[in-house]
Image 1 (cartoon, rainbow, N blue to C red):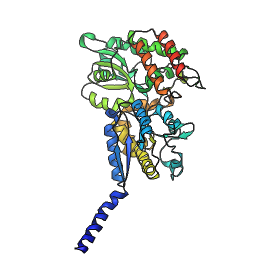
Image 2 (cartoon, helix red, strand yellow; image 1 turned 30 degrees about the vertical axis):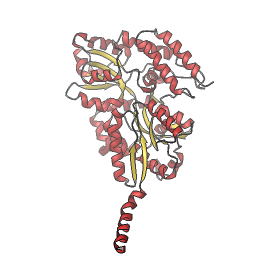
Image 3 (cartoon, rainbow, N blue to C red; image 1 turned 135 degrees about the horizontal axis):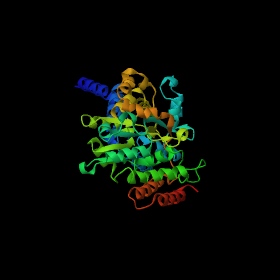
Image 4 (spheres, rainbow, N blue to C red; image 1 turned 120 degrees about the vertical axis):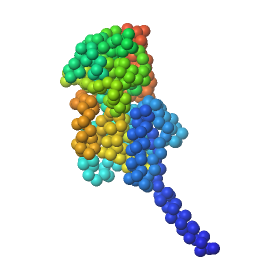
Length: 419
């Protein structure tokens, strides 16, 4: 009996051994309607390649702001995830508050890091005050989606799509057909983090704040043109004041001719439009020539873990998710482009994919104009985002004139900046 018990104990120890050695990490991400399948597939392939690490997801949040707020609450309760995928404009607050862990020591310890595919310029999108806090996971720029069938029907040329807002509005008016429930144009101005507002200002050569970050700068001529353009989208472009969900459904159903949004939706929209209409994409209008910029959208993977064993596992996961395999899964499942240079050059990964999917190449062509998605400084950074959104809403719904809304938005933002 003693021998049998001894054998049983050894067997139990043998079975429990690998489980005991396994490190579990928790991962948080936002926008599940875009990223759920992608994140789960990356975790599945990672765990198959790394059986000593288990990945467990927290409940995903609807938007990037929600993800940031959740982390801030978790920091108080001591329940931080080990890895978080945060919007490019939300790294700053986690770095400034000492919640995120700098990744520079982990990068320095890597052998052949130069061959890992992380382009130096793209790495800067994950840096705060010279330190690397985020590794780019998904990147995007704003683009124009259009229904080539409706464009042709209206007398437009899909191969020579307008490059100015004025040209787009003129085409939208021809597409607009209320009797058949067809709308000509929509611009998703309320994308998280004032992203599309920044796109309008930056594309006209403007900035959010002055270089010293002490004074609002979006009230200058580029910002004035931006907010006037937003109002013209209603008056000249025929845009309706509807939600992002409504504009998306209208577009994929063939009831919306021209739609300004992020490349992030391209993967899903391509599938939904198949067999319904001919989907095409075009560049975002640039109003300042060489001075035009477009904010880089998307998110980065950040490490919050403090335990050395968790940090080691978290770093392996971050490298996998943002590396060639994770990037390939992400691109094919969304419309984003990768922050890793290897997949696009490899025919087995994304080389052939881009060759066969010209709609995805439009955003990559806008890379020379890409700049950082701006994050307002100080404790009120998130509040400023909400204030700007509220004032933009008054322009869209017509309750305020563009100049008046810009003046009020400027004073309210200025009051919330660090003194």
